[in-house]
Length: 403
Image (tube, rainbow, N blue to C red):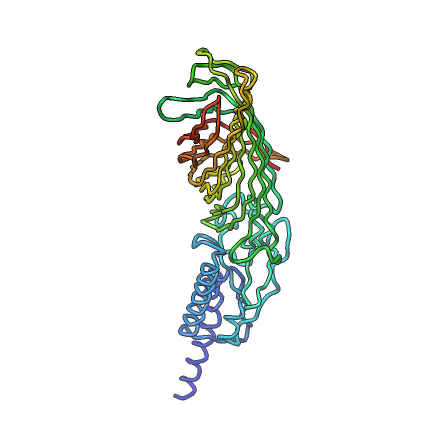
C-alpha cells in the first residue's frame, strides 16, 4: 500500500513539473521578461500564485514610484527586473537582458507584439535598458530628455503680422493700423545631470521681438501714416512637467522690457495742432503656462500669460513743437507704476524632415493706469501733465520655422 501511495505521489509531482511552463507564461506577461524554470524544479499551485502575486506587486510598486517622481503616467509601461521573482523562489533564474536589434526578440509566444502594446510609432530603442540604483529596470523612453518635443536646444524664428490699436478715454484718442515684424525665441533645456535641471527649474529662454508700421491717429485732429516701431526683450525661467504620453506642461516666469516709439515730429493735425514724438517703456514680470500636445506629424502648443508691469515711463517730446510756436518747450517725462497685460496663443506645428513649420495666432492686451503728474511750462503757461489711462490691443499671427 505504501508503494502505491509513493507511486501516486510521484505521478502527481511529475505532472506538476509539466504544468509549470504554462503557469510561468502568465507571469511573463506581467514582467515582460521570460521566467526560465529548471527542468528538475518543482512548484505547487500555491507557489505559482505567490510568484505571480509578487510580480504584480513589484510592478505596481514600480509604477507608483515613477508616478511620485512625475516621470510616467498610468498609461505608460513600467518594467521591473526579475530579481523580485528570484528572491521569492530559487526555482527561477534570469535570462540575459534583451539585446538591441532591429527586430527585438519577445521571449514568450503568449506575449503580444510590441506594436500592440505601444503603438505603430514605438521606438525600438526602448529595448536598450538601463538599471536604476534601486534595482528597477526602466526604458529609456522615461528619461527626462527622451521626449522629442523636449530638445536641449530649440530656436524659433518667425515673421508676424498683426492689427494694432491704442486707445485713451475721453476725449477719444486712438492710434491704429497694421504692423509687421520679426521675432526669435531660444530655449535651453539642460541635460538630466546638470545642476540647472533641478526640482524647481529646468527650462531657460530668451526672446526678442521687433515690429513697425504706419498708423493713423485720431485725437486733437487727425493724421495718417505716423511711423511707429517697437521692440521687446524677455528672459524666462520655467519647469517642464509630463502630463501623459508625450504631452508636457511648462510654467514659467521672468523679466520683460517693451519699448514703443511713435514718430509724429514735424506734422500738423487736421485741426492745426502740432505733433510730437512719444516714447513708451514698460518693465514687467511675465507669468505663464505652456501646454505641448504632440500628435505626429503635427503638434499643438497652447500658451496663456499674465504680465505685471511694475515700472513704466512715458516721454513726450514737446520740444518738437518749438518749430511751430517759437516757445522753448521742454520734454515731459511721466512715471507709471501700475499696469497689467494678458496674452495668449495657439501654435500649430508640422514636423518636417529637418525643421518644424508653424503658424501661431495670438492676442496681446495691456491696461495701464494713469501716470504720475509732472509740472512744466509749456507754450508759455505752467501746467500739470500726465499720461492718461490707456489700453492696447494686438491681434495677429506668427509664421515661422523651429529648429
